[in-house]
Image 1: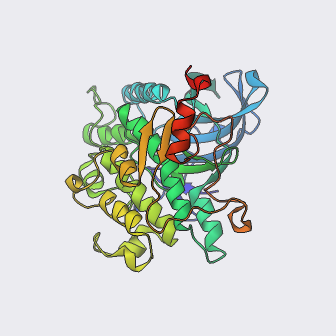
Image 2: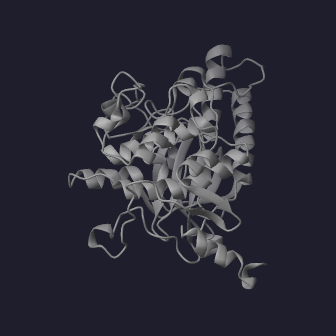
Image 3: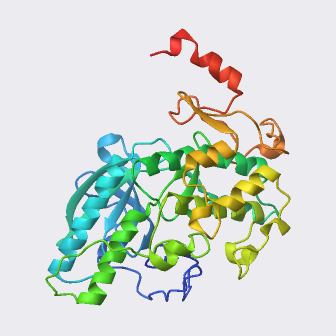
Length: 385
């Protein structure tokens, strides 16, 4: 089973230090409530039957469960068990956790796991706080990339282009809702089996709660009757998050765009940021790739070290990639130079690839057709309502 640091970075079993942030990993990873970790097939809250543990981090554990009230439908339970002791600190931690659950509740997008509920339950005479979300059946882009690397391959430019086209509207949506993800990386993006769309998971808000509580305890002690405020916490993965986020704890929409650009480069090169960027963040990563001029220029601006040099919004990135908004979604009007969309009938595009069109029943943005076809559809009387 993977080992996670306090910021939920995944590490191979037996690791002593986090491979991304260098944090020393605790030998005892059972957390505050060790009894529940091995409670396979235990029913929690008279509704959710735990099947297995998916992972754990500084805020608690995540489980795959079955919703008994919905015909055993799979779902994800996130147990809030911060590594703090003391009634007051735990109470304030729960208040922050509930506040962040309210933020997740506001997000209603088909490419974000749906928030189901927040509830309390007792287990072995201990009170537990759980957040329930939809389970996304698929593989993370980290898993997809590792599978390709075993074959000496990585993602091709057309696939990454389609990946950006499908994910940028999701970032536009959350940023308009006033939410910054803070932790975009191949680990937190799942290629969903059903419609082959990227799904954004593991928002940094819950991790921010754990970091806020940890910082509070360090500065004030466990028993201090002082209010806990949510400070500018330093969240994100080294190499993926921009400097202002890692050093100052400040995150903006363009911080997420920076992380998305680095994620795209990792998929293209098959290497971690530290490997292809070197010590200088301005190293010419073009030495690793042969990209079209448009995509190369867009990625370079997205991951500029100076925040003011980046695109301020996902909308501007989409415009730079030749995508304009219409009422039906987003349509690519002019493919970037040297961009040749792959044919879905090609054998090499089958299987675990990120280029398939959305499932017909999906409510996500429609496939990206020529503008003329989109306008014709918009003028169709059957689509007015």
